Length: 172
Image 1: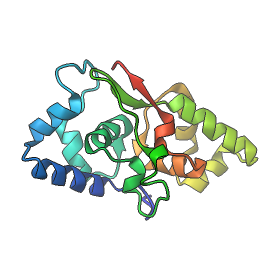
Image 2: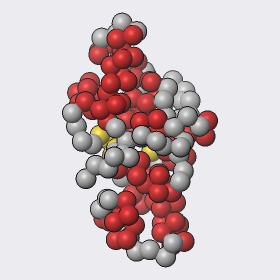
Image 3: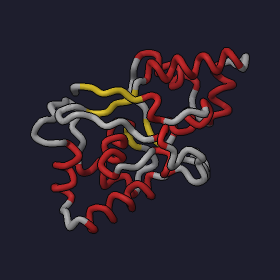
Image 4: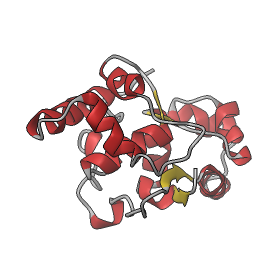
């Protein structure tokens, strides 16, 4: 269930579209820039429908959103209403070299989440309830699985850490 303080996919789409129009780009040109074509050799290519679908979807794959945010040069927190880290330097996503992509380090995220859970003496079910997410999905992070927006931003907020702390540069 979306919360009023969730990451806004619709605001992300609006910012992408404004930037696209301001620069006089077509969506295919935007996609080329986001993919850093032809150097990106990923099995999980970011598609135009994924990007433009943020306008109407309730959730979006985390690594794809990172590519969109990098293109905009914005923090994930800047799309969460009232987030205190929205403009902080510590929240900025890292620069990445050509031919590389930015991904979430879900194992690192799981370790931080588990440490906070233990510190607060909570069960996974209690953590999930506080976050408004499923407990099994939280534990699944330990396997290095992908995350989705807006839910992942609830985790970062609960940890009181910027999303950028849980990213890594990857070849694909």
